[in-house]
Amino acid sequence: MRLTKPLLSAGLAVAALGAFALTSIDAEAAVKPAAAVTALPAAKSGKAAPGGGAAKTLILYDTTGDYGWLGEVYATQTANLSSHFGSWTAAPVASYRAGDLGAYTAVVYLGSTYDEPIPPALLTDVAATTKPVTWVYDNIWQLTADGAFAAKHGFASGAFDNADVAEVDYKQQKLTRDTQNKSGIMNLSITDPAKVTTLATAVRPDGSTFPWAVRSANFTYVGEIPFSYVTHDDRYLAFADLLFDSLGASGTAERHRGLVRIEDVGPDSDPAELTAVADYLSAQKVPFTVAVYPRFRDPKNKQDYTLLSKPKVVAALKYMQARGGTLLMHGYTHQYGTVANPYDGVSANDFEFYAAHIDGADNVVYDGPVAGDSAPWASGRMVASGLVFAAAGLGTPTLFEFPHYAGSAADYQAVNTLFGKRYDRGLYFPGVLTGAKPDYSRQFGQFFPYTVRDVYGSVVVPENIGNVEPTSFNNHPARLPADLVASAGRNLAVRDGVASFFYHPYLGTGYLEQVVTGLKAQGYTFVPATSMLAG
Image 1 (tube, rainbow, N blue to C red):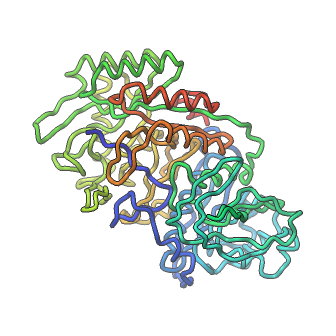
Image 2: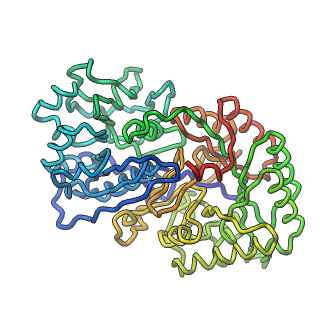
């Protein structure tokens, strides 16, 4: 058995329900009255991703109320995306002082708490500035209350539309929206249509529509938080693309790149399967990455060996390298100790850097760091892994991918120190952005449609459309080539984005051919993952 990667949603994962159960508390956050706080987190800054622009983005987020912690969650995700365009600084909105905006080229405010007290200085500066402003969801009424904003920009706060909107249309793409999301969307009052451009529309079940995002002059408004209940095909993609305009990259040319990663390759892999994949991709002139763990363990059956005892597998890996493959480090053993984590302790099935179990409803539940976790412990495993690669004559990988896309904050810092680069989706925790102790009960994931430098400091090569999974597992439906191709089509909404997937070689080449052919037909050009490190 090989466990596929979980879909790490850009929404929140609730630990009690498992990392696959997305938050249902955003609706409460939207209506919960704000409460006073006594201390504010310090501002946090991050550098641009490689090839990033010159933007200096100020990200302001809410902190009050019972769900004030969600502000940091959304700020983390916005910061990650913003790094594609330049540097960023994230701070609680309550800490804003008059003139702070002057040090930045753009500002993004994330309104996640209903009636968060917005400093009057921010309202004044936003109303007066000509710099790009992106205002997301709540508290727009505080800005439009005096009427002057509507006179200038042609719209004012409206009412929350609580229809079960399942579709957001953007740039000729029908993006999805999970109807579990009951928090509503702000339906603005458009007072002067000549001044307002509708950028994306929300589609109600009856087919009627209303603006999901609008722009007037330098001001962009998005009617909901775009980070909750996210899937591969989500309206999150519209927000990711809108940032090109909001953060100073509006002149970016259309470019759509494809990436493929061959997944979960280890000493126990079938060499014939590896060479067949390499032959197909090479014939198609498709560069590819191979995710390798160099040590196989099956404690129950007392098996433990490395690539050094499997010369045919090593030869197959060298064959892949000669045909356009680049090896990355996919952990050391891709399992943890002698325990089921969460399945059977066998390499490629289990988590290595994070603890998990399966609950009675067949959900995988993320429990937190493994026993003994620390940055030195994680670094030791990575160094040990690299030594096996080198001893096998495969070279030492310069890219890392967490097994099952999961590790603790300390583990991510270890990767940043040793590699500085990953090829995966990220797992994040409240506290990482602010410097507080990570809250492992509220982990959340995020995928990216372009290269970013995330809040851990690492450059992240994106994987964003998932993998072929012919059968359902752990309450996840099967995912076939047509599903990946459909997701790639929706990702065309991102003007300089990718369709990046991973593939298990034991599936043969039939499904792989369907995905590669489908992406090429949509205009994607396959590139090596290393090319993404230049932006």
